[in-house]
Amino acid sequence: MTNSNQDAVSRGFFQTLTSFGRAFWCSNVIELLERWAYYGVRGGIAVYMVAAATVGGLEFSHLQKANIFFWWAAFQSLLPTVIGGHADHYGHKRTVAFAISISVIGYISMALVNGYWPFFIACMLVATGTAVFKPGIQGILANSTTKENATLGWSFFYMIVNIGGFTGPLIAGYLRLMSWKYVFITSACIHSLNFITLFFFDEPDRGHVAFEHNDRSLAEKISRVFREFWQVLFSSLKNLFDPPLMMFLAVFSGFWLMFMQLFDLLPNFITDWVDTSRAVAFFGNLFGNQGWIEYAQAGKQIPAEWLINLDAFAIIFLMLPIGWVFGRMRPVAAMILGIFIASAGLVVAGYTMNVWLCCLGIFVFAIGEMIASPRKSEYLSMLAPPGKKGLYMGYVNFPQGIGWMLGSSLAGPIYQYYGDKTTLARQYLVENLNMAKETVAQLPLDQVLPTLSKALNHQSVQETTRFLFSTYHPERIWFVFAAVGILSMLGMLAYDMMFEKKRQQQADANSAAPAA
Image (cartoon, rainbow, N blue to C red; front, side, top):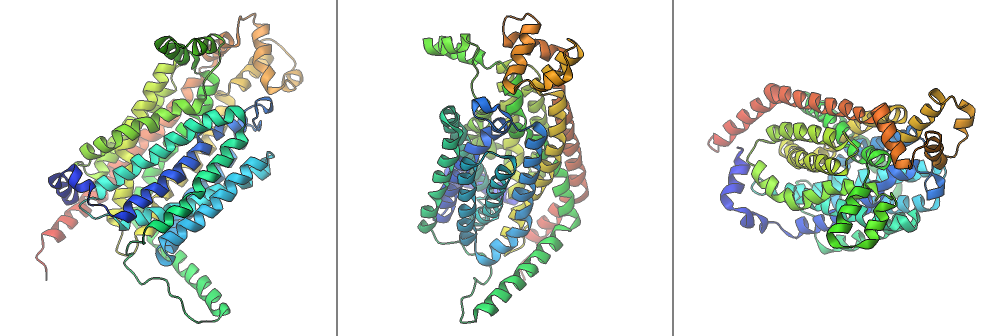
């Protein structure tokens, strides 16, 4: 157990909770609203991009969707690596305000466009706004916590993230039944409320001289801004190549490759393969709601993001106790355990068409996520030198970016050719029923399954779905992503033996040494 964790345990849960100041609580409100807006869009956008135009979708291929997510990852997760240093220099509140403006423009743009490239640009605006936002808000949080309350502070922050992450998709699931435009406009309005919250607190001390205002000419000020930009950029990249830091970020990228499939791929898998009508029927019978029962009997499904929302729901209610219990573990050890549990959960979630097993897998995944993910922020905050909290909080997003980019490149073709129900139905029509390839290719997206169902004399599209599942076994794709998670866990074990134990021994020796 680390010294900070020992202090937190000895102080008691509620005493630690009341030790936080106004900046901490306001930063959590800002994070709540930002995540509400973000996940309101992200929760269902994977389905929106590939859905048929007849149901309001964009009809992109999974390869096009993967390309958008690839660049989304690059903008959102790699930019904070260099932006973090600028957040330290210019101020975290200024950074957050600028980020809100960019994201709001992006959400509004999403509501107004439907072509591939215009939608791509709108997504990049949201990604850039989120990239600028992260080191700013995390820098405020890092500077408003101490070594005595950091573990609980980051656990609380992660719980708040998931309250927003739960609320957004829950409301968006209803809004998109009316129109997807309402989803995007609502997210823009919710995020705009953060401009007000910024006025309610002063920025915590950043450990360096604040940004100066003087009477220099405009040209001198512009020159200084560019000069300082490149200086901070060089410093950010230089710190990134520290061997222990580089290995930690590289190894944790594997976890993020696996993690992001919960949001980028599992919604598509649920929409294609999981029979969610069974859950609707169960709750209809449980509560005596005849409308739900009839909804299920008609074979209608619930939005996939509502099932994914079980992850956020579990974190809302379990994050603080799990953070408290596993706060007794070293951060690296907790991350190793969490990665293993999350890998197992992902396989369970995608292994069958059974909605209850899918929910169980998502819940198990959430347990692993709660153990592993918050500790990486705490760990990098511990490593950060004074005055570089924002820089190191920017590094938090580096492994997510690498893992997300690689995962998108991998998931796009894997699902397009081995998991997409429409693709597999077209394949069966051509290869097994000898239908002309050109004829099959011209079938509208929403007519492929009914055509195959009729050709096979099936009673329903649901029967055809079960037939395709047993024929092509799309569940096997999840073993690929779980294997990456296990490799990440093994890499973290190696990092622990090579660097972390030595660092901890040095830290303990320094704390035990008498003051000069």
